[in-house]
Length: 77
Image 1 (cartoon, helix red, strand yellow):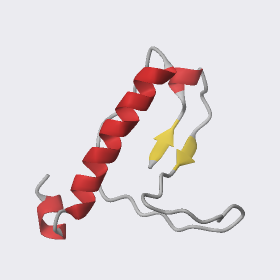
Image 2 (cartoon, rainbow, N blue to C red; image 1 turned 90 degrees about the vertical axis):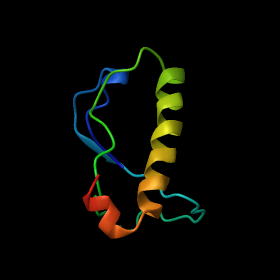
Image 3 (cartoon, one colour; image 1 turned 30 degrees about the horizontal axis):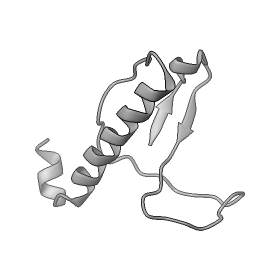
Image 4 (tube, rainbow, N blue to C red; image 1 turned 45 degrees about the horizontal axis):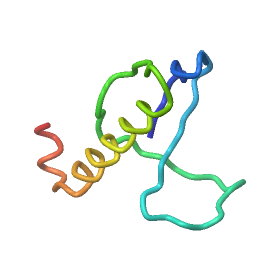
């Protein structure tokens, strides 16, 4: 999930964007409950969309590793 402005696109309004891994259903208009587990990194502005996409790939890898770890190990990170 990402919560904050979108500085790469010059936006200042706070948004919440959530990536649902391995999920392929139409849920537009539905209500979801989102729980934050840990913080991967701070907010930053990217020079271009390609750099943002590359970071998003790295963030997904890190999030999958984090979510796959036992809960006790998460508290130690």
